Every structure is written in C-alpha cells, then in structure tokens.
Image (cartoon, rainbow, N blue to C red; front, side, top):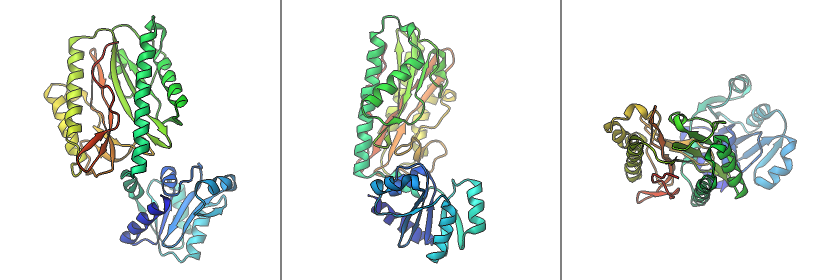
Length: 358
C-alpha cells in the first residue's frame, strides 16, 4: 500500500520538476507511510523515503512502517535540510498548510529551491482503493446500526423530556465505540426544535420535547476511515409545512445522488439539488454546500458546492447533504455517503432516510 502511494507521488513530483517532497500534514503523513504517531515529517526523494520523528515513536515506527528510513531527532526541519544537502536535492515541494514559523525556517536554511504546493497528496487520497472502500463501507454500515440504536433508545423512553440533546450524543458515542469505532470525527450534532434551524448546532443541555423535530449529524472513525451521516426525524406529529419541507429536501437529495457519475462536477451536482429547493421557495434557507469528500478526514476532496470546479472520478466518496432551515418551522438535513463507480454511484449509507415520527 505505502509503496504504491509513494510511487504515485514520485510520478507527480517528476511532472512538477521536484526531486524532494516534504510532508507535514498529519493525515497525509499517515496516508503515505502508515505511521500512526502524532509527530514527525516525511521527506520523500526520487530514491529515498525518510520518516523523521523522535525517540518516543521508535518502536511504533517498527510496527507501522518498517520499510521507511527512520531518523530520530527533535529537530525535524533541521534534519530535513541536512538530508537535502546530503542527497543533493535541487527543488523541494512543501505543503502549503505548513505554519509560518516552519516556512520561515525552511526559507532561511534549506539548501535548494523551495515551492509550496496545494492538494497534491489530497488529490491522491480522494481516489480510494478497493480496500479503502471496503473499510468505509463497513464504517457506514456501523453508522446505520448506530442510528437505529438511537431511535430505539428514544422510543423506549416513557418521558422524553427526561432526555437531553447531550444524552443522545453520549448514547450514540458510547454505542459506536462499543461496536468498534475508534473515535468521532467531529462533535456529534443533536439539534432539536428551533435549534434544528442552526445547521451546525452542537448537542446542548436542552431537553427533548414532545411534538418536536431532531437533526442528528454524526461521523465515526473505523480503522482510521470515517463515515458522515445526517438524519432528521420527529418526536410526535409535526406541522404540514415541516412534512412538506422534509419531502422537498429528500427530493433534492435523491435527484442529486441519481446524477452522480464520473465526469460530473461538484458545481453541477450542487445546482441540481439547490434548484429543487429554490423552486419550492426555500432557496435562502439552504445556506451551505451540497457535500464534500470523506476518508481519513471528515472533509476531503472533492468539494460539492456552488463554487466547486472539482470533477468526480471513479473511486471517490462524497457526501450529499442538502438542507433547509426555516425559523418557526424547523430544520431538515439528510446526508448520505456515496461511492462514485464506473457505472454511476453506490449509496454506502443505505439505511432508512424516509420521514418518520416516533
């Protein structure tokens, strides 16, 4: 796995006329090397692949990535400069996400040309291997079990007002970790009632109420890869307008998903779903992008939004998550994880997304 990823990167380095590539982003560092430690950098040249970290991780490197050339030091960038001198590097690509202090150090001390690059490894990461797809598929299946567990937890409670949004988030966190998830990929969103009109409301101490709606947005890492799902459901009967709003958002999501295929752009997908919500009179209440890629991180390439020029490719996994958040009516968001296939698409989070009242 690691060697094939390095080979792909070296081909891109050759195309861009670099003989060295410095990896400082933690997710990219793990993706390229398999190293699960939380500190260090990678220096990849035409012939060598160095993992520069400190003595805390010596045994961990032996386990995670024994084929990498290990350099133990606390002076990561200083060692990068020394290796560049030793290997006679002429041009180094470094990730544009590096902080200013580290850039300033390299600018003063690196013995050859430097250039910042963006989204090189991220673009490579966006195309999932069969093994990666299988892991994310498993993560998505676990998400479905978690959602069903939440519904059963709420249905069994005789006094719904005794449960807070925070209680629901904790229940889901514990269920997912008990069943194999390593951690959540973002703070679990549980937003009920008027708070459901806040697209990214965090779970609060507010009690659930009868005749209210709940938005549940969650993602959990399984074997380092995350899912990302949103479901909106109701506790008790809701207004006719809220029911209609749900049907509109669901229709927008369905049409967007059905348009997924290699070659379509993120902008085109956004327009398909957004047009349906806008024509129904709720366009101003859909105030975020249609989706994004997922994988080792909760937000990856490609982007699916009004300003996105990214073109979907086979093997990418994107979320499709239209929403409408109407004050005094309620908020609705429905989000699923979709694999782009040669024939079109596969819904990985293929569990109940129809309107339901508990």
